[in-house]
Structures are given as structure tokens and as C-alpha cells.
Amino acid sequence: MDTAKDTHQELLNRNNELLRQLEEANDTIEAIRSGQVDALIVRGEDGHRLYTLKTADQTYRVFIEKMNEGAVTLNRGGIILYSNSRFAAMMNLPLEKVIGLNFNTFIPEISASKFNEVIKRGWDEDFKSEILLANKNFQLTPCLVSCTTLDLDEGTALSLILTDLTSQKEAEWELKVKNEQLLAAQNAAEKLNNELEDTVRERTNDLLISREHFKLLANNIPQMTWTNLPGGEVDFYNQQWYNYTGRRYGETAGWGWQHVVHPDDLPHTMEKYISALKTGNIFEVENRYKKWDDTYRWHLNRAIPLRDDKGEIIFWVGTATDIEDQKKEMDRKDEFIGIASHELKTPLTSLKGYLQLITNYKKEDVPPVVKQYIEKASVAINKLQRLVNDLLDVSKIQAGRLEYAMGEVDLSNLIKLAIENAKHIYPLYDFDNQSTLGLRINGNAERLEQVLMNFVNNAVKYSQVNKQIILKTAVHDHVVRVSVTDFGIGLSEEQLDKIFERFYRVEDKKFMTSGLGMGLYISTEIINNHQGKIGVESELGVGATFYFELPLLS
Image (cartoon, rainbow, N blue to C red; front, side, top):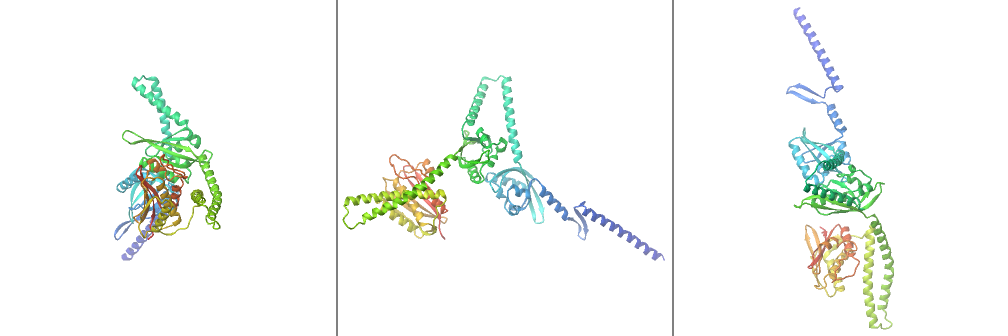
């Protein structure tokens, strides 16, 4: 009987224990369901193990997605393993196109060195720093980046939290203006209440006069004017800028001027601007600025650096000159050139035909003196026809209609043909063929011959003493350079910068030449359409080498 009682009692105890465990399990399930717990520790044969619930991961992801900051995760190679929607929006890209990219895609060249330092330290320790990011439209955004490492199943990754500092920077610029105004007021009060030494007073007066002169000059010229720091941030605009754009200082200070540039012109403008900041060369570019009434007008931008005694740049001074009317006049000029050249072509063709008929007249002998006049007239007509053809080419270039068929071209044959034509036109000159056989490129033989003849014509014009001209080919890294070298008057540094511009002619009192200054401009467009490069090397008084480079066919 005692054994039966014991067994009954054990069953009751076991039943009570099971009921307790069931109640505990129900409480745990309710806590999980209501989100009171995110993880469980379970004891197993190998000891205790931590199990994270999927809802906890989901909560974390929802939190990250709702953040106002951008968030990305990078591997050791800089590849974006994860990105939230906010970062994709900051870079103006769809989220699916951000993941898998290298983060360096969004780092402008001006910030590359600093970003590499930030990433290097971020892998070693939690680290924060300010950098610039560039979206797909080349617009720069100042950001605070916070780095920390994460241990994932796949290995260690780097988490970046990116905070947009644009509003903060604008506020800082506004605060800077207020501080400058306060400082000016303090200086004025100090000047009224304190007597300074004569030398200090004189220097202060000189500084104030220079500053007021600058402001007076800047605010009374028709151009928009600015100054920017060596890093690129603009710290001053003249009154004309505010009148034109209708913007406040804080809206365009720093890098805010990007919002005023036409979106189509911004990439080229940024490329030129950052290149000037990096090299210290003069910044010059044409672009369109938005007016206060949301219309755009063309401007010529030009900025030069001011340097200290050590040659270091202190700041840049820039101007933006309205060239909208000049652009329109140039368009009308191009339209006139197109109409005039078409109208001249027909009578020229007829006149050339009549001269050929007279030359071939067989019924009676044409007097020798008449034949001589006909030959001179034919030379003049051929020259005029070349000028008309150049005008037609220019009008086609401006209309974007300079098109021609492309095919395989043997450069040695092309150079040989050009030399034959040159010898016929310029019998007093010595043309030296130093080309290599078997070089073939993809192009249009007629247009490339036109480029070569333009080079030859220029060589002849400006080398009337030494009459040797060399046509040469050279190959480097699967690219062929075709060059024409003369030993004439050469070009100055200023002429080298302008020689390929439309209507530019080298003026020399000893060698006054004819022409409209369009040959090299047309040649540039032809080589650009061949995806090649055109250039010149020259030394004043020694000679010049004009060349173009094209990729060889395999």
C-alpha cells in the first residue's frame, strides 16, 4: 500500500511540474508574440546557446529604414553589401542600383584622400569625420560619416552612418555672416571708444579703404563676381549675383551655387572647377545660370587664384559674364554662313564648268594669253571653292550634321595621296614621306585627307624660307600618330591655346596669309568624330608639328 501511495504522489508531483512548465511556456510564447523579448538562451547538450528572433532583426531593419541618415555596410573591398533607402535617395539612385557598387563611386576626387584615411581608421576603431559625397549628377553633399565594424556570419563588415550636413553648413555660413557683422560692429565701437597708435590707425584705415574699394568695384560691375577658398567653398558674392539669381547668401554659399547651374552644364562645370582647384590653373568655362524668373542665360566664367609670397593659393577671384546675346549673334552668323555658302556653291560650279568648256574648245585656237588667264581664273575659282566648302563644313558642324561613312583606311596610301596632291599644288616645296606601311585605322579617307591637307596648307603658309615638310607616322600603345612638321615661324604660347578655335588666324607681319581661319577648327571636329585626338607642338621661330592620333585596327 505504501508503494502505491508513493507512486500516486510521484504522479501528482510530475503532473504539477508539467502544469508549471506549460504555464511558463505559455508566458514565454505570449512575451514573444507581444515583442517583449528579442532573443532566447537555450541550454543544450553543448551548453547554452543564444537564439535571436526574426522579429528582432525585422525591428532593427525597420529602424534603419526609418532613419533620416544614410546607412550602408561595406566589405573589405569597399563593396556595398547593404544600403537603406535614405542613402539611395541621397545619391539620387534606385536602391537596387546602389547595392553591389563600390562606395568609391560616390567619392569625388577632391575628397578621395581624406575618405581613404577615414575608411582605414574605421576598420581599426569607431571613427567620425566629415567628407564630400557626389551623386550621379555630380552634385556634392557635405556629410558626417560614422564608422563602426560589425561581426557577421560572413565575416567582419564596416557600417557607415552618413548624416547630410547641408542644412548645418548653410546655417554655419549664415552664422558666419552674422559674426562678421557683429565683429564689424565691435570694431566700429572699439574705434570710437579707444585711441590707437598712429601706425595701427593708418594700417586699419588702409585695410578698410581697400575692402571698401573692392566692395564698391565688385558691386558696380555688370558681371557676377565671387571669391572662393582654396578648397572650393564660395565665401563672397557681389550684389549682381543676388540681383540675378534672387537667392539669399545661405542658399548659394559654400557649394550651393551648383543649384543655379543648368543640370546639363553641371558635370562639365564641376570637372573644370575641381581641375582648376587641383592644378591652380585658370578656371574658364561656359555654362547657363538660372535667373530669379527660372529662365537660363549663357555666361562665361573665369577665375584666377591669388597667391601669397610662398606661391600658396589664398583664395580665388571669379567673374561670370553674360554672353547670351553673343551666343545668339553667333547662331545668326552661323545661319548666314550656311545660307551664303549654299548660294555661292551653285554659281561657282557653273563658272568652273564654263572655264572647262573654254579650255576644251577645239574649233579654233585659243590665244595663249587667254589660256593663261583661264588657268589663273581656274586657280582662283578652286581656291574660292575650297573656302565655300569650308563654310559649308562649319555650318554642318554647328548644326550637328557633319556626318560621313566610316571604313578601313590604309594610312600609308592616304599619306602618299596627300603628298601627291601637295606636290601638284606646291611644286617648290620638298615633302618627305616617313610613314610606315601597313597601318590601318577605322575612318573616312576623304575627311582624313582633308585634315592632312589642312596641316600641309598651314605648314606651307608659315614656312616660306625653309621649304622642307615632313609627313610621319609613329605607333605607341596601339595608337598611331600622324604628324606634319614644318620649320617655319612657329607658334607662341598664346597662339597654341587658340590655334584650333573657329576663325582664328595667326597674324604675322612678315607672312601675311589668306584664309578664314576655319581649316584647323574643321579638322578638330573631324578627328573628334573619329574618337581621336588632335594637337600641336611648336616653338616660336623654330617650327611646328601638327598631329592627330587614332586607334589602330587589330
